[in-house]
Structure formats: C-alpha cells, structure tokens
Amino acid sequence: MVGRMAPRLLTRPAGARVAILEGRADSLSDASLVALIVAEGSDAVGRAILDGQARPDGLWRASAEDLVSVRGVGPAGAARLLACLELARRASAWSAADRPVVSTPEDVVRLCATQLRGLDREHFWALVLSTKNRLLRMVEVSVGSLNASIVHPRELFKEAVRISAASVVVVHNHPSGDPTPSGADLQLTRRLVRAGEVLGIEVLDHVVIGDGGAHVSLREMGAL
Figure (cartoon, rainbow, N blue to C red):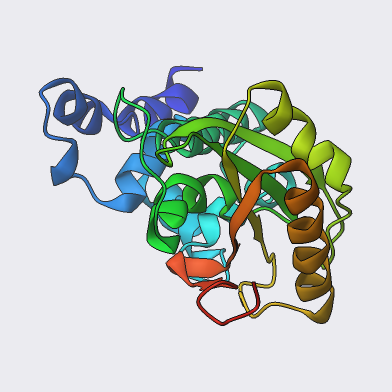
C-alpha cells in the first residue's frame, strides 16, 4: 500500500500552492495553474488539458466530457475547473462598483465578451441604459441554436420599460467565432429598432461578438 501511495504524494502541487498563497500566482505557468485547480498536481496533466483544445482560448469552450477524457482528470477536478471558468466570466463583467457608461462598441465588448466566450449557443442580451448611457441592467433575452437567435421584441423591451430605460444596446455572440452579421441579424435589428421607436426606447447599437475580442457594430457599418 505504501508503495502505491508514494508516487501520488510526490505529485502533490505543494510548490504551486505556496506560490498562490504567497501572492506569486503570476510566477506559475498556465499548465501549473490548471493542474492546481484539478488537484492532480502534475504539470503534465495541465499541459494535456491545454493541448487538447483546438485554439489558444479553447479552454473556455471545454466541456466536462472534454476534461474527463484527459488521463488523470476525474469528475471532481473537471467540475472545479469549469466552476473557475464560470466565476471568471462573471467577475469580469463588472470592472468597477459604479455603473459603467456604455457609449462605444468597445465598452460592450469589455462588459460582455468574457461571459460570452466559449458558449456553444447564441446568447442574446440587452444592455439597458439610463439617459446618460449608464448601465442599469444586463438582461439575457434568449438562448438560441448553434447559429441563430430567437428574439421577440416584447421580451427584450419588457425589462427596459419596467425600469424606465432611455435606451438599449443589444448584443449577441457567434459561436463560430466569426462576428460577421448574418442576414437574420440585420433583419432582427431593423425589427427591434422599429419596436423601440414605438415605445420611445432607442436601440443605440447591435454588437455581434466573436472570438478574441473580435466584434462588429451594426451602427458603425450603417445598418441602424
């Protein structure tokens, strides 16, 4: 029994834990951080997880099935890593305690890109704004398919009307990574603009987000 346990004791990530606890997380490699989270203690396991992804930021797209297929990663380790990724998505949504001003497509990307990264369905959100373009609320309007969003204007504007918003910016992701708007995106945008005009709530922009911060503003391309 002792002979079987010794190798496991030797692989515990004591050095990585110490670095984290001493505030030296930036001294660790990506593989060391991943290995520490899944609690396997071997950089080889961390490298195997990272190497198994198809693109540099592919870890955001990893599923539980992808992770447990790596030798040395069990369901508990996979759950911890996925929980860390989800927490990172949420934490990055708010850069300050004050409500941010949304006045450019880049502001939208800063607020939304990390949370939308790696999702395998189109998620359609509305950023509900005050008269000074301060964010009042971020609303998930719908979750669509691999390549389409199903959005009803009444669902998008319901919360905006309830909190007396002045305007909205709508945003959705393209799981393919290519933010080029589709014909359906253009048609939906025109429909939402018309509905907003009736309600007195301006649709300021529709931003489509792809991979790595790539994005397209339909206002900038003249589609609004």
